[in-house]
Image (cartoon, rainbow, N blue to C red):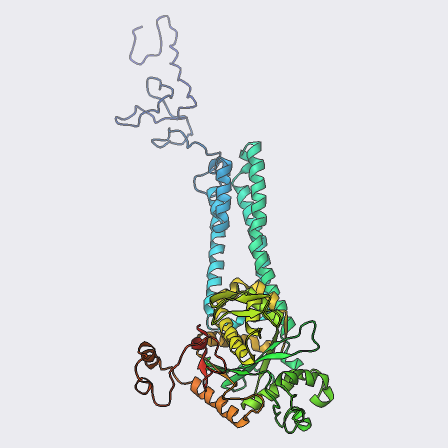
Length: 574
Protein backbone atom coordinates (compact mmCIF):
# COMPACT_ATOMS: atom_id res chain seq x y z
CA UNK A 1 0.00 0.00 0.00
CA UNK A 2 1.35 3.27 -1.06
CA UNK A 3 2.05 5.98 1.46
CA UNK A 4 -0.35 8.88 1.36
CA UNK A 5 -0.01 12.37 2.66
CA UNK A 6 -1.34 12.47 6.12
CA UNK A 7 -1.52 8.65 6.33
CA UNK A 8 -1.08 7.50 9.86
CA UNK A 9 0.39 4.05 9.10
CA UNK A 10 3.89 2.72 8.69
CA UNK A 11 5.15 -0.14 6.60
CA UNK A 12 4.03 -3.42 8.14
CA UNK A 13 0.50 -2.22 8.83
CA UNK A 14 1.09 -0.64 12.17
CA UNK A 15 -0.30 2.78 12.97
CA UNK A 16 2.07 5.64 13.62
CA UNK A 17 1.99 7.05 17.21
CA UNK A 18 1.36 10.81 17.26
CA UNK A 19 4.18 12.99 18.64
CA UNK A 20 4.00 13.64 22.40
CA UNK A 21 3.13 17.22 23.36
CA UNK A 22 5.64 18.75 25.85
CA UNK A 23 4.29 19.51 29.32
CA UNK A 24 4.18 23.18 30.34
CA UNK A 25 6.72 24.20 32.96
CA UNK A 26 6.14 26.56 35.92
CA UNK A 27 7.49 29.39 33.86
CA UNK A 28 5.37 28.58 30.80
CA UNK A 29 1.79 29.70 30.29
CA UNK A 30 -0.77 26.97 30.88
CA UNK A 31 -2.24 27.45 27.41
CA UNK A 32 -1.32 29.05 24.09
CA UNK A 33 -3.03 30.31 21.02
CA UNK A 34 -3.95 27.73 18.35
CA UNK A 35 -1.91 27.88 15.24
CA UNK A 36 1.45 29.38 14.69
CA UNK A 37 2.57 32.59 16.53
CA UNK A 38 2.23 35.70 14.39
CA UNK A 39 5.29 37.58 13.44
CA UNK A 40 6.26 40.36 15.89
CA UNK A 41 4.64 38.65 18.87
CA UNK A 42 6.11 39.14 22.35
CA UNK A 43 9.20 37.12 23.03
CA UNK A 44 9.26 34.37 25.60
CA UNK A 45 10.77 35.51 28.94
CA UNK A 46 14.36 34.59 29.42
CA UNK A 47 14.85 31.41 31.38
CA UNK A 48 11.49 29.93 30.35
CA UNK A 49 11.11 26.48 28.89
CA UNK A 50 11.44 26.25 25.12
CA UNK A 51 8.28 25.81 23.14
CA UNK A 52 8.04 22.48 21.38
CA UNK A 53 8.07 22.62 17.58
CA UNK A 54 4.78 22.67 15.89
CA UNK A 55 1.54 24.27 16.77
CA UNK A 56 0.20 23.69 20.27
CA UNK A 57 -3.48 23.18 20.60
CA UNK A 58 -5.42 24.98 23.30
CA UNK A 59 -6.70 22.84 26.11
CA UNK A 60 -10.44 22.32 25.97
CA UNK A 61 -12.44 24.67 28.20
CA UNK A 62 -9.51 26.93 29.00
CA UNK A 63 -9.80 30.70 28.78
CA UNK A 64 -7.96 32.46 26.10
CA UNK A 65 -4.93 34.21 27.60
CA UNK A 66 -4.13 37.78 26.59
CA UNK A 67 -0.85 38.61 25.03
CA UNK A 68 1.85 39.42 27.54
CA UNK A 69 0.24 37.25 30.22
CA UNK A 70 3.24 35.09 30.42
CA UNK A 71 5.29 37.63 32.46
CA UNK A 72 6.14 36.99 36.19
CA UNK A 73 3.83 38.40 38.92
CA UNK A 74 5.07 41.41 40.97
CA UNK A 75 7.45 40.34 43.69
CA UNK A 76 6.48 40.78 47.33
CA UNK A 77 2.73 40.45 46.83
CA UNK A 78 1.02 37.63 48.62
CA UNK A 79 -1.85 35.61 47.35
CA UNK A 80 -4.90 37.76 46.89
CA UNK A 81 -3.07 41.07 47.59
CA UNK A 82 -3.23 44.07 45.32
CA UNK A 83 -0.89 47.03 45.07
CA UNK A 84 -2.25 50.17 46.74
CA UNK A 85 -5.29 48.61 48.36
CA UNK A 86 -4.26 49.98 51.76
CA UNK A 87 -4.23 46.52 53.36
CA UNK A 88 -0.75 45.18 52.63
CA UNK A 89 1.25 44.03 55.61
CA UNK A 90 4.00 46.17 57.07
CA UNK A 91 6.63 43.64 55.93
CA UNK A 92 6.08 44.75 52.35
CA UNK A 93 6.34 48.55 52.94
CA UNK A 94 7.60 49.21 56.50
CA UNK A 95 11.02 50.43 57.67
CA UNK A 96 13.79 47.90 57.88
CA UNK A 97 15.62 49.02 61.05
CA UNK A 98 15.02 50.36 64.55
CA UNK A 99 16.04 53.91 63.63
CA UNK A 100 13.49 54.12 60.84
CA UNK A 101 10.74 52.71 63.03
CA UNK A 102 11.46 55.21 65.81
CA UNK A 103 11.72 58.07 63.33
CA UNK A 104 8.31 57.40 61.78
CA UNK A 105 6.80 56.87 65.22
CA UNK A 106 8.08 60.25 66.40
CA UNK A 107 6.86 61.91 63.22
CA UNK A 108 3.36 60.60 63.91
CA UNK A 109 3.30 62.71 67.10
CA UNK A 110 3.49 65.88 65.02
CA UNK A 111 1.43 64.63 62.07
CA UNK A 112 -0.78 61.74 63.19
CA UNK A 113 -1.28 59.07 60.51
CA UNK A 114 2.10 59.29 58.79
CA UNK A 115 3.39 56.10 60.43
CA UNK A 116 0.30 54.19 59.34
CA UNK A 117 0.67 55.44 55.77
CA UNK A 118 4.30 54.34 55.78
CA UNK A 119 3.27 50.90 57.04
CA UNK A 120 0.76 50.52 54.21
CA UNK A 121 -2.40 51.14 56.26
CA UNK A 122 -3.61 53.84 53.94
CA UNK A 123 -7.20 54.07 55.12
CA UNK A 124 -6.28 54.35 58.81
CA UNK A 125 -3.58 56.91 58.06
CA UNK A 126 -5.91 59.14 56.06
CA UNK A 127 -8.57 58.95 58.77
CA UNK A 128 -6.08 60.03 61.45
CA UNK A 129 -4.83 62.93 59.33
CA UNK A 130 -8.40 64.05 58.69
CA UNK A 131 -9.31 63.99 62.37
CA UNK A 132 -6.15 65.93 63.23
CA UNK A 133 -6.94 68.59 60.61
CA UNK A 134 -10.50 68.96 61.94
CA UNK A 135 -9.23 69.41 65.51
CA UNK A 136 -6.71 72.07 64.44
CA UNK A 137 -9.28 73.98 62.42
CA UNK A 138 -11.77 73.81 65.28
CA UNK A 139 -9.23 75.17 67.78
CA UNK A 140 -8.26 77.96 65.38
CA UNK A 141 -11.91 78.89 64.81
CA UNK A 142 -12.53 79.04 68.56
CA UNK A 143 -9.54 81.31 69.17
CA UNK A 144 -10.50 83.66 66.33
CA UNK A 145 -14.10 83.83 67.55
CA UNK A 146 -12.99 84.88 71.05
CA UNK A 147 -10.56 87.62 70.05
CA UNK A 148 -13.23 90.21 70.82
CA UNK A 149 -14.24 88.50 74.05
CA UNK A 150 -11.10 87.30 75.82
CA UNK A 151 -12.96 87.36 79.10
CA UNK A 152 -14.55 84.05 78.14
CA UNK A 153 -11.38 82.32 79.33
CA UNK A 154 -12.23 83.03 82.97
CA UNK A 155 -15.52 81.13 82.79
CA UNK A 156 -15.66 78.05 84.99
CA UNK A 157 -17.40 76.15 82.18
CA UNK A 158 -14.46 76.88 79.87
CA UNK A 159 -12.03 75.69 82.56
CA UNK A 160 -13.94 72.41 82.90
CA UNK A 161 -14.07 71.91 79.13
CA UNK A 162 -10.34 72.56 78.71
CA UNK A 163 -9.51 70.15 81.53
CA UNK A 164 -11.64 67.36 80.01
CA UNK A 165 -10.16 67.94 76.54
CA UNK A 166 -6.64 67.88 77.99
CA UNK A 167 -7.28 64.50 79.64
CA UNK A 168 -8.75 63.08 76.42
CA UNK A 169 -5.87 64.50 74.41
CA UNK A 170 -3.33 62.82 76.67
CA UNK A 171 -5.03 59.43 76.27
CA UNK A 172 -5.42 59.84 72.52
CA UNK A 173 -1.79 60.75 71.93
CA UNK A 174 -0.65 57.86 74.13
CA UNK A 175 -2.71 55.47 72.00
CA UNK A 176 -1.49 57.16 68.81
CA UNK A 177 2.19 56.62 69.60
CA UNK A 178 1.63 53.02 70.62
CA UNK A 179 -0.49 52.12 67.57
CA UNK A 180 1.98 53.84 65.21
CA UNK A 181 4.84 51.80 66.64
CA UNK A 182 2.93 48.53 66.36
CA UNK A 183 1.79 49.27 62.78
CA UNK A 184 5.41 49.69 61.66
CA UNK A 185 6.15 46.02 62.55
CA UNK A 186 8.78 46.09 65.31
CA UNK A 187 8.65 42.24 65.38
CA UNK A 188 10.84 42.23 62.24
CA UNK A 189 13.73 43.61 64.27
CA UNK A 190 16.26 41.48 66.06
CA UNK A 191 15.96 41.00 69.80
CA UNK A 192 18.22 43.94 70.67
CA UNK A 193 16.35 46.28 68.32
CA UNK A 194 13.02 45.28 69.77
CA UNK A 195 14.19 45.95 73.34
CA UNK A 196 15.77 49.34 72.58
CA UNK A 197 12.89 50.61 70.44
CA UNK A 198 10.33 49.35 72.95
CA UNK A 199 11.98 51.27 75.80
CA UNK A 200 12.23 54.47 73.74
CA UNK A 201 8.60 54.27 72.66
CA UNK A 202 7.52 53.68 76.26
CA UNK A 203 9.32 56.84 77.36
CA UNK A 204 7.80 58.77 74.43
CA UNK A 205 4.29 57.56 75.35
CA UNK A 206 4.69 59.05 78.81
CA UNK A 207 6.36 62.23 77.51
CA UNK A 208 3.55 63.09 75.07
CA UNK A 209 1.10 63.11 77.98
CA UNK A 210 3.11 65.72 79.92
CA UNK A 211 1.94 68.86 78.00
CA UNK A 212 -1.70 67.85 78.37
CA UNK A 213 -1.22 67.20 82.08
CA UNK A 214 0.47 70.59 82.46
CA UNK A 215 -2.43 72.31 80.68
CA UNK A 216 -5.00 70.59 82.89
CA UNK A 217 -3.19 71.40 86.16
CA UNK A 218 -2.58 75.02 85.08
CA UNK A 219 -6.23 75.61 84.26
CA UNK A 220 -7.34 73.99 87.50
CA UNK A 221 -4.87 76.08 89.51
CA UNK A 222 -6.29 79.26 87.99
CA UNK A 223 -9.85 78.10 88.58
CA UNK A 224 -9.11 77.28 92.23
CA UNK A 225 -7.46 80.67 92.74
CA UNK A 226 -10.49 82.49 91.36
CA UNK A 227 -12.84 80.44 93.50
CA UNK A 228 -10.80 81.28 96.63
CA UNK A 229 -10.43 85.00 95.94
CA UNK A 230 -13.60 86.10 94.19
CA UNK A 231 -16.99 85.46 95.72
CA UNK A 232 -20.36 85.53 94.06
CA UNK A 233 -22.26 88.82 94.03
CA UNK A 234 -25.11 87.06 95.83
CA UNK A 235 -22.84 86.57 98.87
CA UNK A 236 -22.19 90.30 99.37
CA UNK A 237 -25.25 92.42 100.20
CA UNK A 238 -23.30 95.61 99.40
CA UNK A 239 -22.77 94.53 95.77
CA UNK A 240 -25.52 95.08 93.22
CA UNK A 241 -26.46 92.04 91.11
CA UNK A 242 -24.40 91.71 87.93
CA UNK A 243 -26.47 91.74 84.75
CA UNK A 244 -25.11 89.78 81.84
CA UNK A 245 -26.22 92.36 79.26
CA UNK A 246 -25.04 95.34 81.37
CA UNK A 247 -22.42 94.26 83.92
CA UNK A 248 -21.52 97.87 84.84
CA UNK A 249 -25.15 98.87 85.54
CA UNK A 250 -25.22 101.72 83.05
CA UNK A 251 -22.08 103.46 84.36
CA UNK A 252 -19.52 105.15 82.15
CA UNK A 253 -16.77 104.99 84.81
CA UNK A 254 -15.84 102.43 87.44
CA UNK A 255 -13.68 103.18 90.48
CA UNK A 256 -11.39 100.64 92.16
CA UNK A 257 -9.70 101.11 95.52
CA UNK A 258 -6.26 99.47 95.46
CA UNK A 259 -4.88 98.85 98.93
CA UNK A 260 -1.46 97.73 100.05
CA UNK A 261 -1.95 96.10 103.45
CA UNK A 262 0.86 95.74 105.99
CA UNK A 263 -0.26 92.82 108.13
CA UNK A 264 3.15 91.64 109.29
CA UNK A 265 3.48 89.00 112.00
CA UNK A 266 4.65 91.50 114.62
CA UNK A 267 1.63 93.80 114.13
CA UNK A 268 -1.97 93.57 115.27
CA UNK A 269 -4.64 93.90 112.63
CA UNK A 270 -4.36 95.32 109.11
CA UNK A 271 -2.66 98.62 108.41
CA UNK A 272 -3.56 100.09 105.01
CA UNK A 273 -0.31 101.93 104.31
CA UNK A 274 -0.84 102.29 100.55
CA UNK A 275 -4.17 103.59 99.21
CA UNK A 276 -4.78 104.40 95.56
CA UNK A 277 -7.99 104.84 93.61
CA UNK A 278 -8.07 103.90 89.92
CA UNK A 279 -10.92 105.69 88.13
CA UNK A 280 -11.35 103.99 84.74
CA UNK A 281 -13.33 105.24 81.76
CA UNK A 282 -15.18 102.21 80.42
CA UNK A 283 -15.21 103.38 76.81
CA UNK A 284 -11.52 104.26 76.36
CA UNK A 285 -9.73 102.76 79.35
CA UNK A 286 -8.25 106.18 80.25
CA UNK A 287 -7.41 106.00 83.93
CA UNK A 288 -6.74 108.49 86.70
CA UNK A 289 -4.76 107.14 89.63
CA UNK A 290 -5.35 109.05 92.88
CA UNK A 291 -2.78 108.60 95.64
CA UNK A 292 -3.90 109.40 99.19
CA UNK A 293 -1.42 109.74 102.05
CA UNK A 294 -1.81 107.26 104.87
CA UNK A 295 -1.60 110.10 107.40
CA UNK A 296 -4.54 112.08 105.94
CA UNK A 297 -6.37 113.18 109.08
CA UNK A 298 -10.02 113.45 110.08
CA UNK A 299 -11.64 112.14 106.90
CA UNK A 300 -15.41 112.47 106.70
CA UNK A 301 -17.96 109.75 106.01
CA UNK A 302 -20.98 110.11 103.69
CA UNK A 303 -24.49 110.29 105.20
CA UNK A 304 -25.11 106.69 104.14
CA UNK A 305 -22.28 105.39 106.34
CA UNK A 306 -23.09 104.23 109.91
CA UNK A 307 -19.84 105.91 111.07
CA UNK A 308 -21.17 109.33 110.05
CA UNK A 309 -23.25 109.40 113.22
CA UNK A 310 -20.24 108.49 115.36
CA UNK A 311 -17.89 111.01 113.67
CA UNK A 312 -19.99 113.94 112.34
CA UNK A 313 -16.95 116.24 112.28
CA UNK A 314 -14.47 113.75 110.85
CA UNK A 315 -12.75 110.55 111.91
CA UNK A 316 -11.56 110.99 115.50
CA UNK A 317 -11.59 114.77 115.15
CA UNK A 318 -11.33 115.09 118.93
CA UNK A 319 -7.79 113.60 118.85
CA UNK A 320 -5.17 116.08 117.58
CA UNK A 321 -2.70 113.36 116.62
CA UNK A 322 -5.21 110.62 115.81
CA UNK A 323 -7.71 109.82 113.14
CA UNK A 324 -5.34 108.82 110.34
CA UNK A 325 -6.75 107.40 107.14
CA UNK A 326 -4.84 104.12 107.48
CA UNK A 327 -6.65 103.44 110.78
CA UNK A 328 -10.21 103.47 109.39
CA UNK A 329 -10.22 99.83 108.23
CA UNK A 330 -9.07 98.42 111.53
CA UNK A 331 -11.31 100.70 113.60
CA UNK A 332 -14.44 99.53 111.74
CA UNK A 333 -13.33 95.91 112.14
CA UNK A 334 -12.79 96.35 115.89
CA UNK A 335 -16.14 98.16 116.40
CA UNK A 336 -18.81 96.23 114.47
CA UNK A 337 -21.54 97.81 116.62
CA UNK A 338 -20.62 101.24 115.26
CA UNK A 339 -19.69 100.20 111.70
CA UNK A 340 -22.96 98.41 110.97
CA UNK A 341 -21.85 94.79 111.34
CA UNK A 342 -18.88 92.44 111.18
CA UNK A 343 -16.09 92.79 108.65
CA UNK A 344 -17.12 96.31 107.64
CA UNK A 345 -13.55 97.61 107.50
CA UNK A 346 -13.39 97.60 103.67
CA UNK A 347 -16.77 99.31 103.36
CA UNK A 348 -15.84 102.02 105.90
CA UNK A 349 -12.60 102.80 104.05
CA UNK A 350 -14.34 102.86 100.66
CA UNK A 351 -16.95 105.27 102.03
CA UNK A 352 -14.34 107.59 103.54
CA UNK A 353 -12.10 107.74 100.46
CA UNK A 354 -15.01 108.02 98.04
CA UNK A 355 -16.51 110.91 100.02
CA UNK A 356 -13.10 112.61 100.11
CA UNK A 357 -12.66 112.45 96.33
CA UNK A 358 -16.28 113.05 95.42
CA UNK A 359 -16.51 109.59 93.81
CA UNK A 360 -18.37 106.40 94.50
CA UNK A 361 -15.90 103.57 95.06
CA UNK A 362 -17.34 100.48 93.42
CA UNK A 363 -14.85 97.77 94.30
CA UNK A 364 -11.65 97.24 96.25
CA UNK A 365 -8.73 94.82 96.22
CA UNK A 366 -6.18 94.54 98.99
CA UNK A 367 -2.81 92.87 98.53
CA UNK A 368 -0.58 92.27 101.51
CA UNK A 369 3.11 93.01 101.28
CA UNK A 370 4.18 89.40 100.83
CA UNK A 371 1.48 88.68 98.28
CA UNK A 372 2.60 91.60 96.13
CA UNK A 373 6.20 90.39 96.17
CA UNK A 374 4.97 87.00 94.94
CA UNK A 375 3.02 88.67 92.12
CA UNK A 376 6.11 90.53 90.93
CA UNK A 377 8.25 87.39 91.04
CA UNK A 378 5.52 85.51 89.15
CA UNK A 379 5.94 87.75 86.07
CA UNK A 380 9.73 87.74 86.26
CA UNK A 381 10.30 91.05 88.09
CA UNK A 382 9.57 94.67 87.22
CA UNK A 383 11.67 97.03 85.13
CA UNK A 384 11.73 100.37 86.99
CA UNK A 385 13.79 103.53 86.60
CA UNK A 386 15.26 104.28 90.02
CA UNK A 387 15.98 107.99 90.43
CA UNK A 388 18.49 107.64 93.27
CA UNK A 389 19.91 104.95 95.53
CA UNK A 390 17.24 103.54 97.84
CA UNK A 391 18.41 101.91 101.08
CA UNK A 392 16.07 99.45 102.75
CA UNK A 393 15.84 97.36 105.88
CA UNK A 394 15.26 98.77 109.36
CA UNK A 395 15.73 102.46 110.20
CA UNK A 396 19.18 102.73 108.65
CA UNK A 397 18.91 100.64 105.48
CA UNK A 398 21.27 97.89 106.54
CA UNK A 399 19.60 95.14 104.50
CA UNK A 400 20.62 96.41 101.08
CA UNK A 401 20.61 99.21 98.52
CA UNK A 402 18.68 99.50 95.28
CA UNK A 403 21.05 101.30 92.94
CA UNK A 404 20.00 104.26 90.78
CA UNK A 405 19.30 103.64 87.13
CA UNK A 406 16.99 101.40 85.14
CA UNK A 407 16.79 98.15 87.07
CA UNK A 408 14.82 94.92 86.90
CA UNK A 409 13.76 94.43 90.49
CA UNK A 410 12.75 91.18 92.12
CA UNK A 411 9.60 90.90 94.22
CA UNK A 412 11.42 91.67 97.46
CA UNK A 413 13.32 94.59 95.93
CA UNK A 414 10.13 96.02 94.41
CA UNK A 415 8.38 95.74 97.74
CA UNK A 416 11.08 97.63 99.60
CA UNK A 417 11.46 100.15 96.80
CA UNK A 418 7.88 101.18 97.48
CA UNK A 419 8.04 100.87 101.29
CA UNK A 420 11.46 102.14 102.35
CA UNK A 421 11.44 105.13 104.68
CA UNK A 422 15.22 105.43 104.92
CA UNK A 423 16.25 109.01 104.03
CA UNK A 424 12.76 109.69 102.62
CA UNK A 425 9.27 110.59 103.80
CA UNK A 426 5.74 109.30 103.23
CA UNK A 427 5.20 111.50 100.19
CA UNK A 428 8.31 110.16 98.50
CA UNK A 429 7.11 106.64 99.23
CA UNK A 430 3.73 107.43 97.65
CA UNK A 431 5.45 108.53 94.45
CA UNK A 432 7.47 105.33 94.27
CA UNK A 433 4.39 103.23 94.97
CA UNK A 434 2.39 104.74 92.11
CA UNK A 435 5.34 104.04 89.78
CA UNK A 436 5.33 100.42 90.92
CA UNK A 437 1.60 100.13 90.20
CA UNK A 438 2.02 101.72 86.77
CA UNK A 439 4.98 99.47 85.90
CA UNK A 440 3.03 96.37 86.91
CA UNK A 441 0.00 97.41 84.85
CA UNK A 442 2.19 98.10 81.82
CA UNK A 443 4.45 95.04 82.00
CA UNK A 444 1.87 92.38 82.96
CA UNK A 445 0.91 91.90 79.32
CA UNK A 446 -1.30 88.97 78.17
CA UNK A 447 1.66 86.99 76.83
CA UNK A 448 3.55 87.45 80.12
CA UNK A 449 0.47 86.35 82.07
CA UNK A 450 0.04 83.23 79.90
CA UNK A 451 3.70 82.26 80.23
CA UNK A 452 3.58 82.59 84.01
CA UNK A 453 -0.04 81.66 84.63
CA UNK A 454 0.66 78.91 87.17
CA UNK A 455 2.95 81.15 89.22
CA UNK A 456 0.43 83.99 89.12
CA UNK A 457 -2.38 81.67 90.20
CA UNK A 458 -0.38 80.56 93.22
CA UNK A 459 0.66 84.11 94.07
CA UNK A 460 -2.85 85.54 93.92
CA UNK A 461 -3.92 83.13 96.64
CA UNK A 462 -1.99 85.39 99.00
CA UNK A 463 -4.21 88.32 98.14
CA UNK A 464 -5.84 89.39 101.36
CA UNK A 465 -9.31 89.91 99.95
CA UNK A 466 -11.52 91.69 97.41
CA UNK A 467 -15.20 92.31 96.81
CA UNK A 468 -14.96 92.03 93.00
CA UNK A 469 -17.56 89.35 92.23
CA UNK A 470 -16.92 86.30 90.07
CA UNK A 471 -19.62 87.40 87.65
CA UNK A 472 -17.63 90.56 86.86
CA UNK A 473 -14.38 88.80 85.90
CA UNK A 474 -15.41 88.20 82.28
CA UNK A 475 -16.06 91.90 81.44
CA UNK A 476 -13.14 92.93 83.66
CA UNK A 477 -10.53 91.19 81.48
CA UNK A 478 -11.13 93.26 78.30
CA UNK A 479 -11.32 96.41 80.43
CA UNK A 480 -7.88 95.62 81.88
CA UNK A 481 -6.50 95.28 78.34
CA UNK A 482 -7.93 98.71 77.49
CA UNK A 483 -6.25 100.25 80.54
CA UNK A 484 -2.89 98.76 79.58
CA UNK A 485 -2.87 100.58 76.24
CA UNK A 486 -4.64 103.77 77.39
CA UNK A 487 -3.40 106.97 79.01
CA UNK A 488 -2.81 106.76 82.77
CA UNK A 489 -2.47 109.98 84.74
CA UNK A 490 -1.77 110.39 88.42
CA UNK A 491 -2.77 112.90 91.08
CA UNK A 492 -1.13 112.92 94.50
CA UNK A 493 -2.60 114.83 97.45
CA UNK A 494 0.70 115.82 99.02
CA UNK A 495 2.38 119.07 100.14
CA UNK A 496 2.78 121.83 99.23
CA UNK A 497 -0.65 121.85 97.54
CA UNK A 498 -2.38 119.53 100.02
CA UNK A 499 -1.50 119.22 103.71
CA UNK A 500 -2.66 115.96 105.33
CA UNK A 501 -2.91 117.52 108.78
CA UNK A 502 -5.27 120.27 107.60
CA UNK A 503 -6.89 119.10 104.33
CA UNK A 504 -9.02 121.36 102.16
CA UNK A 505 -11.84 118.99 101.23
CA UNK A 506 -13.39 121.29 98.62
CA UNK A 507 -10.06 121.75 96.88
CA UNK A 508 -9.48 118.00 96.84
CA UNK A 509 -12.85 117.29 95.23
CA UNK A 510 -12.37 120.00 92.58
CA UNK A 511 -8.94 118.66 91.71
CA UNK A 512 -10.36 115.14 91.49
CA UNK A 513 -13.10 116.17 89.07
CA UNK A 514 -10.68 118.18 86.92
CA UNK A 515 -8.27 115.25 86.68
CA UNK A 516 -11.05 113.10 85.20
CA UNK A 517 -11.99 115.78 82.69
CA UNK A 518 -8.37 116.24 81.63
CA UNK A 519 -7.83 112.49 81.25
CA UNK A 520 -10.42 112.40 78.45
CA UNK A 521 -8.69 115.11 76.44
CA UNK A 522 -6.27 114.07 73.66
CA UNK A 523 -2.59 114.50 74.47
CA UNK A 524 -0.78 117.42 72.82
CA UNK A 525 2.32 115.56 71.74
CA UNK A 526 3.63 118.05 69.19
CA UNK A 527 3.88 120.99 71.57
CA UNK A 528 5.40 118.86 74.30
CA UNK A 529 8.05 117.68 71.85
CA UNK A 530 8.85 121.29 70.88
CA UNK A 531 9.44 122.23 74.50
CA UNK A 532 11.70 119.26 75.08
CA UNK A 533 13.70 119.96 71.93
CA UNK A 534 14.11 123.69 72.53
CA UNK A 535 14.67 124.31 76.23
CA UNK A 536 15.84 127.86 75.53
CA UNK A 537 12.54 128.93 73.96
CA UNK A 538 10.33 130.94 76.32
CA UNK A 539 7.50 128.89 77.79
CA UNK A 540 4.83 131.35 76.59
CA UNK A 541 5.70 130.66 72.95
CA UNK A 542 6.13 126.91 73.32
CA UNK A 543 3.02 125.95 75.25
CA UNK A 544 -0.58 127.12 75.28
CA UNK A 545 -1.54 129.68 77.89
CA UNK A 546 -2.06 128.15 81.30
CA UNK A 547 -0.29 124.87 80.38
CA UNK A 548 2.93 123.95 82.13
CA UNK A 549 5.68 122.12 80.30
CA UNK A 550 5.97 118.49 81.42
CA UNK A 551 9.29 117.51 82.98
CA UNK A 552 9.91 113.80 83.44
CA UNK A 553 10.90 112.71 86.91
CA UNK A 554 10.88 109.27 88.48
CA UNK A 555 10.07 109.99 92.12
CA UNK A 556 8.79 113.53 92.63
CA UNK A 557 8.93 114.71 96.24
CA UNK A 558 7.05 117.52 97.94
CA UNK A 559 9.45 120.01 96.28
CA UNK A 560 8.95 118.73 92.73
CA UNK A 561 5.29 117.80 92.89
CA UNK A 562 3.33 120.01 90.52
CA UNK A 563 -0.33 120.82 90.75
CA UNK A 564 -2.79 118.73 88.75
CA UNK A 565 -2.58 115.24 87.36
CA UNK A 566 0.60 114.13 85.62
CA UNK A 567 1.31 111.34 83.14
CA UNK A 568 2.77 108.28 84.80
CA UNK A 569 4.81 107.48 81.70
CA UNK A 570 6.57 110.81 82.11
CA UNK A 571 6.76 110.77 85.89
CA UNK A 572 8.09 107.22 86.15
CA UNK A 573 10.12 106.98 82.96
CA UNK A 574 8.00 104.11 81.62
